[in-house]
Length: 370
Ligand SMILES: *Cc1c(COP(=O)(O)O)cnc(C)c1O
Image 1: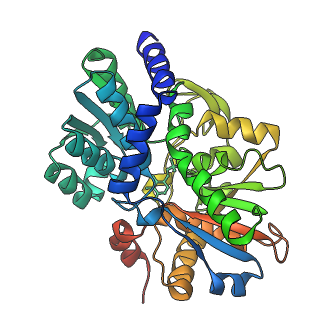
Image 2: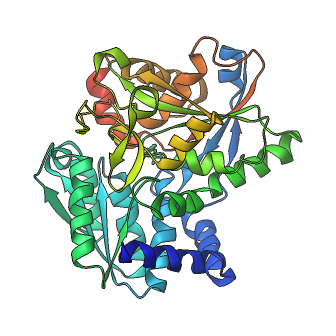
């Protein structure tokens, strides 16, 4: 608790400091490559009868939205006088983003990663090492993301004086969900301004995939003041919600406690966390950020799930029709455009393209016969 309270106070001070904001915004522009475009998707619009635009987080340095948060937290760590950074990673995307900003800012970096994931994501492990990070294999539990998070938390409480823990999504204990949302809200703020500039309108709906919830919450936050804009979060339905093999706590879970927060969760009758499945490693997490749980209970945001198969179809659809190869996670958001009855004809929507698909090509090639 003292570590979290210190972090809460330090973040609050930094976030209200113009010098910190300027440093963050300058690096987002000059290093990450922001603002990224808002692309009109004419052919997806034709196919769906909707008006579709796409926010292009895939064009950020390192290929996804994760660097927005990694950069913000690394700058905060420097400000707090911490020289050592730790992080957890599943597919390796957050690990790579964290190793990247640590190289940029001259910070020592150690990444916890499940042994199972290390085997599945060799290329990202190599990238992290090339960037100067140490990758610590985690052999407990299912040897995946949730176990890596446990190990990182253990390291943090042991080394809290020297170390900052960069959580990769808007989950975990306060202040993380709030802090990560604030570092990611550049997605929504930028998209809203770009949309208004081009169409002199606000969109009818914004759509994003939800793993822990960071790209979605940062995107949605830009539209909190627009009561007429729907927010649609898309979870990993895996092999189907009735199969039990999915990662959809908001659509098919129940409230419980995991990793220091109370939120929707995949758990059994005894409150034990149950195994998850998704074709996309970045959505394969049994919990979700508390703010999404709150938005769901308020009825302000809507959450749906799409299956592995629907996501794979959407990935091919967007590639064929728009020349954009998205990440498997993002493919879930695009798949929602085809859910019968979810959107009204002519509805104006923005899909957040959270990342590009390069990292998934080996997985996808193994699943598709082309
Ligand atoms: C990690 C990742 C996600 C899922 O994480 P959130 O915190 O829910 O955003 C989604 N898309 C991409 C491309 C990712 O790398």
